[in-house]
Image 1 (tube, helix red, strand yellow):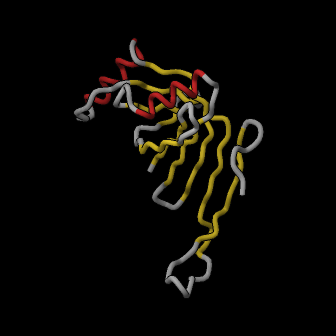
Image 2 (image 1 turned 90 degrees about the vertical axis):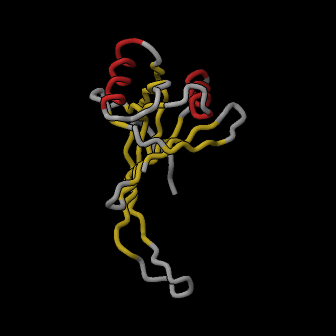
Amino acid sequence: MKILATVNKFGEPHLAFNQSLRLREDSNLEYDEIVENSINSRNMLHAIWSNKIIVVSVFTNDRRGFKVAAKPIRAIATGQDFQTRYEALRKNGRGFELGTVWILEPLSFIETTAERPAPDDKKTGTIAFRPKKRFYGLGQPFYSS
């Protein structure tokens, strides 16, 4: 599962579930925005214009989690890069139009992994997990607890 968290110019948060997020050869992240005038696209434009950071969360099937602080650095809506991505989506049988390809520069990230089960919670019947956090990044971590 991949989630992008952005805020608008008033600071209101918005979450977008976007499974197209991928790592580029230049170590930047890239994802496809299907609706060009979506809330997420507007917030990404705001982030570029006002030099804001967005957060990407990725959760894997093996219970690993990653939180990435990133800065949108480019929006691709025309040209060869856009056409190549558009054709790849059509080739894969996805029946939607591509609005924008966003390029994100990762600034820092945290890996959060469930280390081992904690004792069962007798009151609620749930099993809690103790997360193991590792901080990585160019500069200070963007999140701590």
